[in-house]
Amino acid sequence: MESVTAWLHKYRNDLFFQTEVNVIALQAVFAIIIIALIVVSFSILYHNISFAIVNGIRESLASNAPTLMGPEIIAEVENIRTLNLLTIIGIVSIATIVFGYVIGRITLRPARNALESQKQFIGNVAHELRTPLSIIKTNTEVALFDTAMAPDLRQTLMSNIEELDRVSQIINNLLSLSILVHPEEMEFASVDFSSVVANVVELYGPLAKSKELEVLVRNGSNMDVWGNATALEQIAGNILKNAISYTPKGGRIRIMIDRTLYGHIELSVQDSGIGIPRKDLYRIFEPFYRAERSRARAGMYGNSSSGLGLTIVSELVKAHQGRIAIRSSVGHGTTVSVYLPAAHTNDMSDVRPAHQNAPSEVAIDFSKK
Figure 1: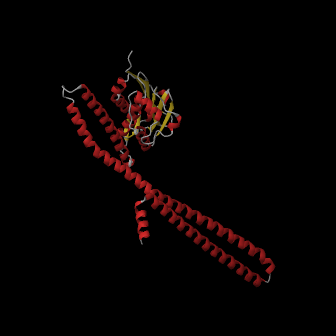
Figure 2: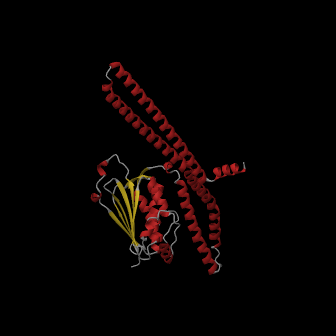
Figure 3: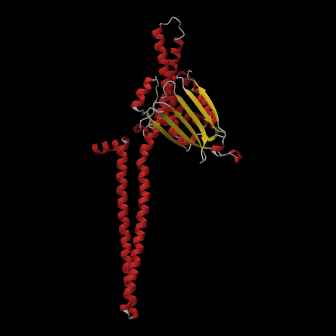
């Protein structure tokens, strides 16, 4: 009884053990059902063949021509065997597909529930942390109003505010990830992507100015995207912030918005930054993953990253039925291209191929001449 109780306790609380038991039990049930199907099928085959042989013998005796009925009996037996074999194959195939689906659903259910619970827990913790962090930041900012404060203490408090802002950014990213548990709840509409990108460039203008970066925006006409305005702003904002963060002082950033030939709107952000090693390109969308070399070199420029920016971008792009591509070379920069579905308009006369659009260029130069 003690062993049974311990086993049941482990089954209820250990999701991996629960999954293993479920899979083994389902496979055992599947094997029993397959064996039963084969036994029943062979019983039916034996019965049909016996019935065909007996009928053939009776007919041959009744017709007084037993030598002529032999080939007919053999042909009938062959037909019955082929039909039963095809029936067995069909039944086993259908049973395999059904049980494969059931096993997959049951096997992945604990992992799916654990992932959703994890994201929900992260969201709840992030919500709880926002209030005390806001209070700490407010109190620190109030303390900085003291004009008689020692310079060293003032510098320490200002550094604390910067770190609090960084923690707040991480919390906001975690909340975004928790919201993406149910991306189907996002509201979609026709959004002017050009305006979204322009707002993002204006938002991160001071950061680019502090690093004396040259920012060039090349924008086409009729760049309406079918998506969520807040999510689109976060996509463009995270990509641009990464480009600014990992571009050394005096570098350049090129932003292009254009229409592709396949009915998508392309956002391309090209920087002259430190680049990403090839071995790290396959993992940059993982949460909290940052290349060690990139992290070390970024520290030289005074940058910091939460490690969630590209993860959120990837999830948001998937929610918009789009795709993202990254090309990078160490020491030569990175290009991030996002392809999002264009909004369908009633008046298609304004929809022209990309090379016929009349793009406008806006140069925002924060570099010192």
